[in-house]
Image (cartoon, rainbow, N blue to C red):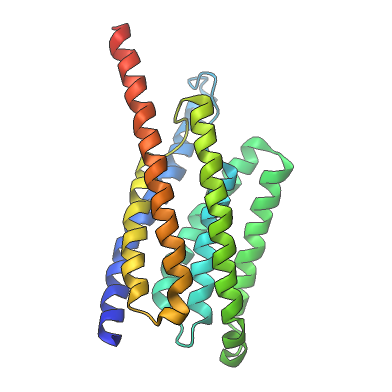
Length: 233
């Protein structure tokens, strides 16, 4: 079991780099759309249009749950810690862009809440191992709450897609990368002690379903948009 744990830990971490690329692709889309907007080339849209603040923070919260679980496990899990730390930094930059553009209280609350979580998580690295073991149930509860919030975020994202009938600043590649992340993390979680990894299994199984639904909607909108362009020509 220990050999398979390390094997799938390495494989999952390598595959997670695809997820990091997807997250970074989302951020680069926002940056490129900001340049277009500054040149008045983005008609009736903003750089972050159609991107759900709730879904973005939900992803941050979910990655934080994995990140904190890695810290609190009896044997510090570097696979979860390093990969999720990378994701948290990219998502923090994305949340900043959303807050900077929209300037509403909710986006601000989620952005500053994300900073608080990051500081809390990083400070926990210096806690004694005996104290961290007592926080393990808290880490598991965090993941459950993160799943609930993120599923709500996906519902909110779906509503925005159906409302505006356009993709806006959403990165399709990010959601495609998320699918690979859910599958690889599910396999990795099954190589761990199930009494500790069940929150990961619950989280990634539910998110796999939600992301498939979002991707289907994105493809549907793209298909309708291409059909309109074809009919117009």
